[in-house]
Length: 572
Image (tube, rainbow, N blue to C red; front, top):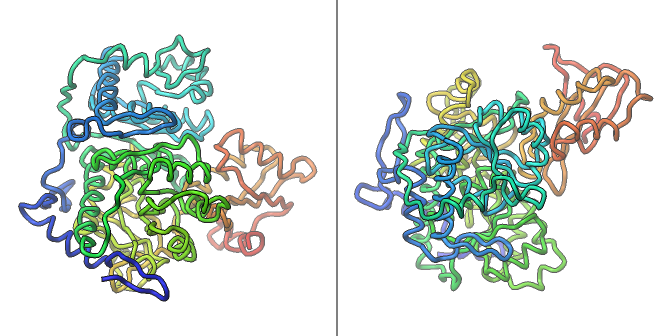
């Protein structure tokens, strides 16, 4: 039955009905049957019938959907079979040209191109480990992570290669270029290698579910990015959970929803170097047979045009993106009737936007997802019906795979409604942080990953986030370590003390701000400090506002800088 709230009728059932269907299709003998599995002496709920590895999933998708359109990029239209053929050829090239072995790390420094997907698939097909890098980084950010991951090869697009060329040459580190410019055309590139090794046959990799598939680097409160290590099983579990959830929702809504006349099609607005882009768009689209349209860059009107042109049914991006779609003056000039789901992830969506989506799109229902790099984006989901009633909630943890608790300072579970740290248990969680045993130990308690988010569970089991324990700023879905920005400011000769914190931003949710105690305010100004930070860090990490002071910053009794006082003085 429809759920009515004020003057809005939602033709979607509430979460409890979907959970009922989940319990049915995960029972013994059913398509998504689950069992108990022990990992590191912790029992987890796991799917009985996952593919052995990502490569097996790619092959199944290629055989099942074969000539169906998979990736659309500008004028390029690539089928499921063709992308698998390219990936297989690239996998052979990695083995033959570069002697890549199972377990070797390969860094991908590239903006969203079909080549990114070919590279990722080829790497994981042969049992090597994909290390996606943030394409917005500066040179020293790239090199730090490439060295830490111990990558044996770097795959970069033309701009990233130009940035790294001298360093790669100095390290004698092999590389492959994606989409080389004219000056780079003589170098190894993906297209040439795929053409050279096409037709070499299937790859027999012997990859096990527990083998490492990826290392995604994530900004932590310590400032230095940490490498989140995931197995094939962890990633496949996340993707299969969303597939299960979609199936259960379709069954639950079958009697009240009119089927869409358009085939499933997603708009890829977020970067593949984040788990949202890689897992919820690329990999889920592959296993579900969903067409995915890649945007070369974010532009709201171009997105509106693509939604109409490609009959997009699924939109997923940071809240800023859906807001810009709703507010665009040309919105009503485009036919957006195909759009069914308007999902947000990476940051909280303002509550007032939830209702606005219902008002703005004739068929599109809002939803949101809550997950982290360390959970492979799996966690909680809210929507569509419950989202209107609980617009401030991050959603309901997805049973039976995901378990969420709220812990106190002594790691003891709290009662419903009590506020503490949100922890997530799932076999989809990462195995460890790469080469960082201490961080790994600190991140887990009894199999639960410590999110660093502060919140509570309501009586229906929905997660609500009220604060963050970690010193992290989330700007438009990008995690920024306050410590990393502070450390960069301290490199400037005039900086004596620096405190970095978030300020609210209507468009991006949060922005970076800093109060800096300088030796001589006549020797440096705000613009010069911003330029200095931008020389070392990606532009999205550069403070939007810097206040210069000529006195020591306030301190707590512990001796730490009192950021709460600074926020009240400068950030309001």
